[in-house]
Image (tube, rainbow, N blue to C red; front, top):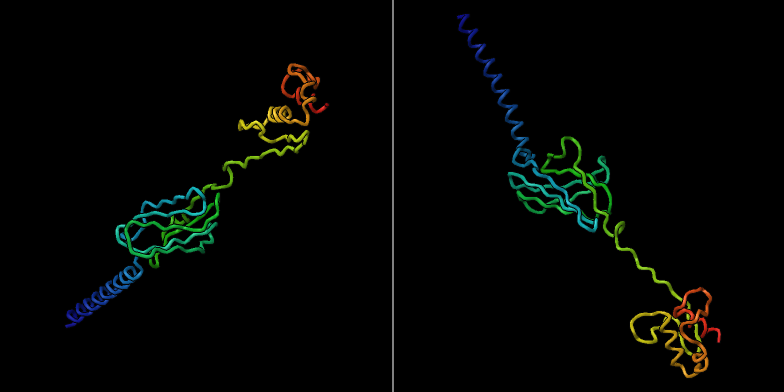
Length: 211
């Protein structure tokens, strides 16, 4: 009788242990199910691509199971305060982050339910492109030449209509201006009027100005 009672006690203890183990496993399974955390929901092939203007970026990843993810991001690993959620369940994910600052480092992680995924314990990261800052086409600087009037002619004006503004425009205008016919007739081409030892159209301009 004592032997039977001992065996019965052992069986009761074993059953209680089994019930406790199964209970713990059941709770953990329920927690996993409620949080949506499983190998099927884990983000894979995570890629961040910055737009050319540096103001937006797209985070892409895939998952074995259709889920709704949230990208949490910021400019430092410790301050991922900005959130960009998906609107529908999918296995091919693409989340656009906007607005962003050009030429700036950003850090992010992906949240699915209560589970957070990152790059082995540290946030993923990317850098936005330079955009319209460095490397952009420089603004063309145009030198403004003061207008000088002589006999009704102005410098900096395409007087001869050839599409190019140069000293020839001024000369042609002076030659065509009735008010200075004698002045033009006294100046000859091929003479170094300005004394720079170079004979060109500037010599004729110098001569005309001195008349």
